[in-house]
Image 1 (cartoon, rainbow, N blue to C red):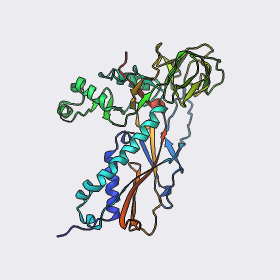
Image 2 (tube, helix red, strand yellow; image 1 turned 60 degrees about the horizontal axis):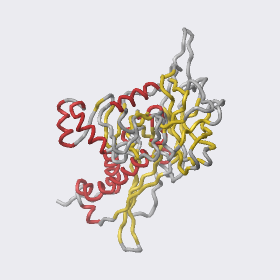
Image 3 (spheres, rainbow, N blue to C red; image 1 turned 180 degrees about the horizontal axis):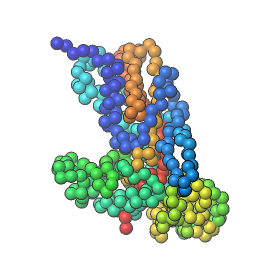
Length: 413
């Protein structure tokens, strides 16, 4: 008995199922799908609103203080349109779905999934201001110290810590599995580490390996940078930096983590100092001109008072500016940006494409539960006299709560 002809609906639904399975980093973040585009379709550059999980404050005393439950949203631009093109014959449509998946769907979806993961990770790590470890290209984390410190860092800043995910570079995974194989999961899972080199649950995090973990190149800073001008304004997001050695292109790079002498982090819930210098992430590349940077853009904005307080004091003129709080410079060092995070730290947003008319096949599949949407179109190529197909996905990324994440950039001292 011959096989049934595969339809566009079957192909796109199977492609969506494969995409969900192939994702790594993306699978562990907040994923949201906007169904407003299900009729007309979305285009690159459209904006959707991503809902931020609600957070409440504790009130003292017997009098009831009712807090309005309003969905806080963050605009997210659908700035990534990725697709994979392929060609297959009508005869291939008579294959079983399992054969078709292995021959066409899986090879097409794998690079799509990697693209979503890679873009998300490379954008999101640069939003995370908390970092632990000593950045080094070859001194990889071989113990759980950095990951337990990352969890503590998140907790100290009032971030959610249950559950947490730790995504690590392949070489870091190899280092950790070899050194800590007996500490991951229960005994019936240990054999999997030796057979497949996989990790599981440890130090309060579910460990995953991803080949898309970004490598960050630190800025080429030199000298003994200091804050030139005392900050007095709440919500400041830029610093004037002085005492840099000469003029330097790329003195700081987006993603560099810095600390300011005398500026300590505050738990946003208790308003108490954590006892550690606050960390800030550089949000845009900055060049030094004649020993100075006129405006070094940083995040988060600094508040020393009020409901948004996150530091115990604003920086004063002459305060030392250091990378990771160390006296020595990590100028130009390249290090993998392993990361511990709660799913609400980041969000992926997807929307539907509008399906074209006059095609041999055209279908889309969306899944509000996973927050993903993918389209499949097949039509006749009159130039080359063949049928051609494409799988497309439209998405964007946003950082919801950067304090819910921490980078582990090397083995802590």
